[in-house]
Length: 131
Image (cartoon, rainbow, N blue to C red; front, side, top):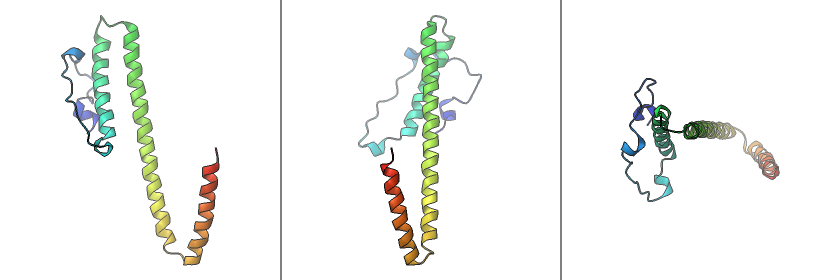
């Protein structure tokens, strides 16, 4: 799913109805943590926050401090999305690098691989001890 699926790609959309007029999403029950799609949940949460923001900003009766709180929530959620995306990209990159390392090691003689692994394990242990 993308933000477009939630109607969040248009810049000139009309303000949504007030939050009390918006139907609440159906309560979902998860059997295990593996059933939870965190990125999907964050996107849905962001869609709700944007709808609330759009309504709040255009509502003349909403106090300025509440408008600021909604804007801060949107900003924080965007920062979280960015951080998550960067972490995911880094993790995927690390997996690819590990796969390349393993592929290269398989082409080397056994004694060279053994020497490398001893040095590698030593460096990883030192890295884990560092603050």
